[in-house]
Image (tube, rainbow, N blue to C red; front, side):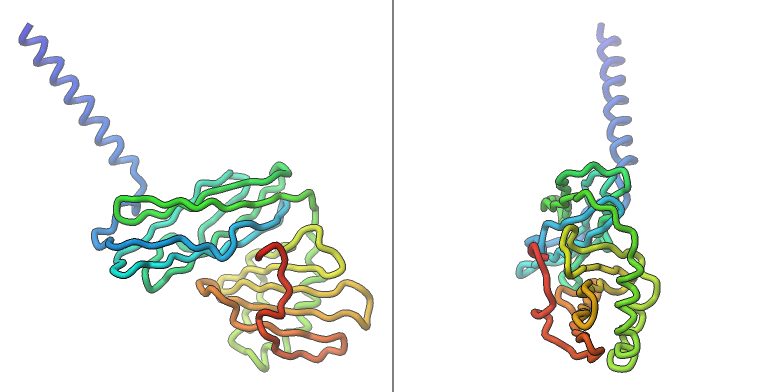
Length: 249
């Protein structure tokens, strides 16, 4: 009987060891707490909801607000429906690098409905979650050539007055309508490797064909600058607050 108990104990020890090893081997690399983690922080989204459509896109801006004594890193990951194609443009934040972007590109097969997904932030041995929303509209629009044609009317002026932003006229990584179902004035978002470019233009015939542009460097909370092109081709810098936005983003 004693021998049987010893064998059972050995079997149980073997099972526990295998289980622990399995859990350890399955743990994602980079999810272990930073040994320098200390202090606390808050998750503060610039906005938490966007409108989108199948084949469209969206971008969310989120920052952490570290408390006094904060040290180490906050590691980020997403829990999202695969058809949203959600992607973090940065997966680690620190007290000196507090802003990250989440981009989505809904698949062509996505269902028309409202979606939610979670940003999971890990620091020390704890996690915080923040929920984001994406309302998918029934829109099919892949013709972005008119947008690029209007955008290029700013090209010479930006190359002369703001040459540091000349790269925005390279082929963007993503381009989509910012606000589905908004008419008369079309709103577009272009995302490059360095910038988020908001662009809008009046779609009526001349002379009422003004356009506006706003540029934000990725990793920054606020736009770098905004500009207005009037119906006669005159371009002027405007306050960022004068660039038109809707629905909180």
